[in-house]
Length: 504
Image (cartoon, rainbow, N blue to C red):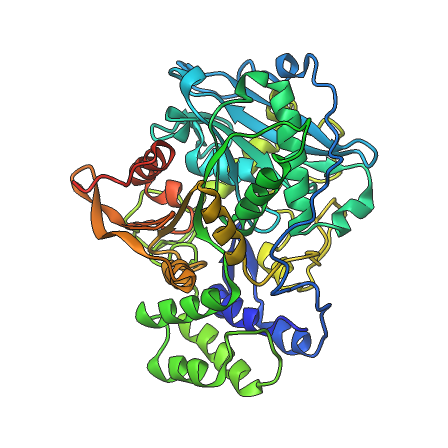
């Protein structure tokens, strides 16, 4: 079945003739729409019933002797003085036979790390780096200066409150790799969850002091799939004898892709209510497009999709009020985030001395480090992309259920903490998508909607449901810790401590 309704979403996101998508890649998806609509897709690629993941009960744990010491980072090139925490990075093999290994970066808390929880951070894509985006641009301890050679400390780094692993997954993303080329053709939700789980149980053997620590998973975007799926695998695996028990206590998903129908409806409504499309196009979309299932039947709908994309113009969908990188405009968004940050990170992580310090690129990969290993949004839609001679993830993402709401419901029953949060200026996966998805669950409200505060101002809004918390971050785009670092840290601290954000 062709994934037609998703074209509506991406067409709106990519905003006419030029779009800056995740990884700062310029694309024009509109030209692909007509040719792609006529192509049939495997019915299993977008499944409404694939709620549970197959569990590999024979996940191997390899010897980790001496690897923690080997992974310790003495110092990163250009690192500022006064760093008071330990940091590690390296590879964990998740499939010895295929030679598939995932790269991680781990930072401990500078104060009382032995009593702080352990958090795994995942970025989405699918196919984007949790190290480059998550650690170096959002919530990690360092940011890269404009020279692309030196670092400065992030005063709102999340390792203030937790010890954090940033995992580049699946193989082919960032520095992660496989010695079996065909592995890159098999990427999908199931493989990603299984490999991430195998990574965790091996990593815990390498760092045994964290085996009983409270464990949380957090992330954003397509990690709205990764996170609940990995949590489900962990809970199911904990039932097996002679298996490492992971003390999973909660998950947090930011501006997340959770549910197909509510994502499309939420994006269309957001663009209209934020004056990014005229009334006649909005009414044309809502009258002629079926957001409930992918279909190819209505060419009138396609015409309104193209009109909507043309109406928006060239803006940055990850923060609809932010300037573009290298923009000559004097206008600035509410945040202080530099829209060219990705360029600085790319330069830094492709420096040989940096890779050596990180114990990265040990196999001399035949391509540079990239924030996303492909045109990530196009891969999600199974578009064709321009191949380069590198270990890119295949354009066909193998399996992606239409919704993960049933998994979230299962996790809610398990009793773990579940938070969904949204920056309210994100146009890629808008706050309306999250709210519509939560409404679909039909759960009771325990704490009514209220404003929460940061530094004497409204930081956002929160509502407590039964076994689920929803929080908005005011003035934040898709990368919440980048746009509103102080507010994001309050949100994170509240999450790991099991408290709602402060009402005053």
